[in-house]
Length: 114
Length: 118
Image 1 (spheres, rainbow over the protein chains, first blue to last red):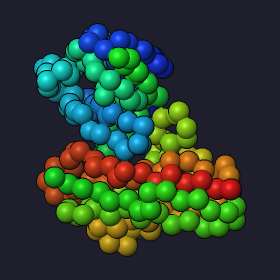
Image 2 (image 1 turned 90 degrees about the horizontal axis):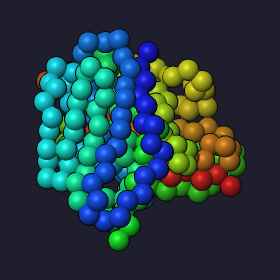
Image 3 (image 1 turned 45 degrees about the horizontal axis):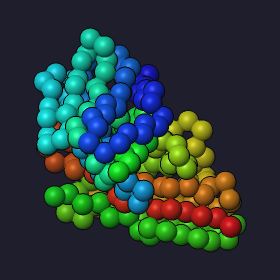
Image 4 (image 1 turned 135 degrees about the vertical axis):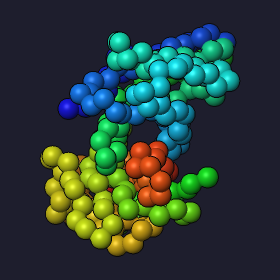
C-alpha cells in the first residue's frame, strides 16, 4: 500500500525566514513519482514539482528547493526567504503503478507573517 | 500548457437535489480522469478513477450509486452526486492525464467545485 506522511500540520514563520516542509512516503514499488502541490485559499492545486524514483538529484527553482532521499523515503521541500504569498497548504503526493492515481499527504498549512 | 476545466466552481442547493459536475480536458485527450474529494482542512482523497468508455473504478467506501461517474468522451468526465445531503458538502476536484506518450505523464487538476448542500 502507498502512504504519504506530512507530520507538520501547521507551520508559522515570519517573512524572510527559511522553512522546510517534511514529506515521508511508503511504497513497495520501485518505480514511483513524488509531487508537491500548493493549494492557496482559493482552492486550486498549483503543481510545483514531480520527481521520479530513479532521479535522486536535488532540485532548485528560485526560492524553492527539494531534497529527495530514498534512503530515508523522504522528499522534503524548502522555501528560502519566505514571503507572505507563500502562505498556503502544501501537499506532498505519491503516484505508483500504471494508472497513476495519486495518494496525498495530509498537507501542511504554512502561514508566513509579515 | 494543458488545461483542465471544471464546472461549476460553486454550487449551493437543497438537500435531495442531484448535482452534476463536469471535468473537461481542453487541449488534450484523457482516457483516464480522477475524482477527488476534500473536506475542510483535510487532504484530497481519491474517490474514483474514470475510464473513457468503461465503468469507473471506485475506491473502497465510496458509494457508486451515490456518486455516478460518466466518461463518455476523451475530453469529458462527469460526476453526479445523487440525492445530495449536507454530509456530501465538500470540495470536489478532478484531474486528467494526457493519454499521449508515457503513461506516467503528470496529472492536470481542475480548479475544483465547492458543493454546499443546505
